[in-house]
Amino acid sequence: MLSRQFVRENPDAVRDALEKKGVDADLDRILDVDEEWRERKREGDELRHERNEVSSKIGQLKQEGNEEEAQAAIERSQALKDELADVEARADELETELERLLLTLPQIPQDDVPVGEDESENVERRREGFDDLRDLPDEVTPHYDLGEDLDILDFERGAKVSGGGFYFAKGAGARLEHALVQFMLDVHREQGYSDVFPPIPVNSASMEGTGQFPKFVEDAYRIGDVNEADYDDDDLWLLPTAEVPVTNMYRDEILLGDDLPLKHQAYSPNFRREAGEHGTETRGIVRVHQFNKVEMVNFVRPEESDERFEGLVNEAESVLERLELPYRILEMCTGDLGFTQAKKYDIEVWAPGDDMPEGPAEGGRWLEVSSVSNFEAFQARRAGIRYRPEPHESAEHLHTLNGSGLAVPRIVVAVLEYYQNADGTVDVPEALQPYMGGQDVIEGHEKVGESALGAGGGDDA
Image (cartoon, rainbow, N blue to C red; front, side):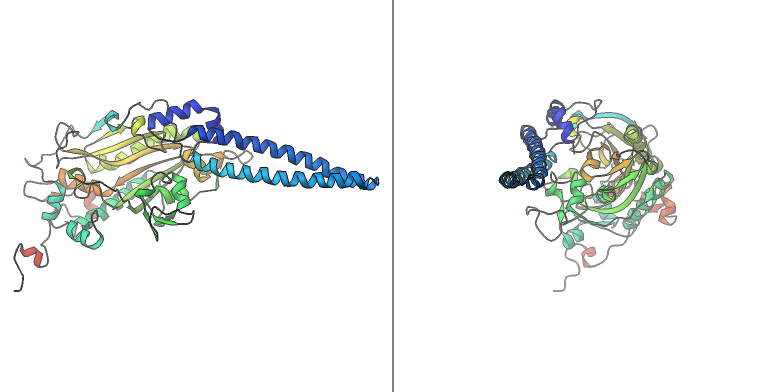
């Protein structure tokens, strides 16, 4: 969140951010509440000072035998106490409202973020891996058809068990997901990341700490109640990304300057409702309600966050480099930047199976597999995460950054489509073969059950 002092002193910058990010928040109300809160605080200080002065005279007046003035002082002290209680109660109400309203204000974009209204105005920074493409079949089979042909992806049974947007990965498909997770974790360990295995349920306070709440409540899976009901800090939700528990590990704590930079990675399943998403662009496992992901979370000194941001981009894309998958890097414009980010790059892998209008000249489409974000102090202020630069210095808010390293299902899509062969098999990327027990080709499996016999087969009449 933005500090109340920043909002108070920079209302034009906040208005500009609201306009650029397309966020609807009542800044005038925030400024009015802040002004009244400060007035009540000043009034309270004055009443407290006067009451202390009056109270200090009561004993003296009694010693002097001036009972009438002493009684008047006592009555005045009580009146001041009552008036102070009313003022402080109002100040507390205003502070609660102010804290709630401040949560509705987005992060301020960095000055060099390109200005634009939506994703169509994002800026491609570079493209990698297209100079030496492997030979592809004349017609690349989309992953959802190929996965069912090989019997390594099962959408029908996933929907039967859990509903639409869930799937089974089976046999070599399941092994491929496991292999990708372990491969990514190993890559990031080499880059200096320490492992965290987080809890899957997270409380509302944690969701607020990283900025998922209150803005994105409708996308979350709530445990034990409906999303529309009011929630408390300790209500539980299935995590939408490991960013939430890992960042909040240090909520309301003070780290030491020597601890930084602190780099954690975490594998987790992730749960998102993604309400209303459907169609060819999301068919298969491109956009599902449960998916595996490795997340990288960084805690750094403020003066180091811009450099660390570039390093984090390189750490995420190194997974694609080693898998030899073509990809590109996009910088988000202000209108597509996101509520909490000061700067964000998306890393998009090339999946050649489905031609989309916004895809590259080679055909196919782009799939986002990582969003690398610099939140500056926005999350740290919401979650109360500070650090002490030196042992004798005051604590201040640090900066947080994160990026997926990477989202597993979309990498599965890219592998199945980019590494497929004309005979319907799929080559396993060389870097993954040790994680697949030396397997270098996915040939599929024989289907099981009566459904494998086709229409009309196996039905006892």
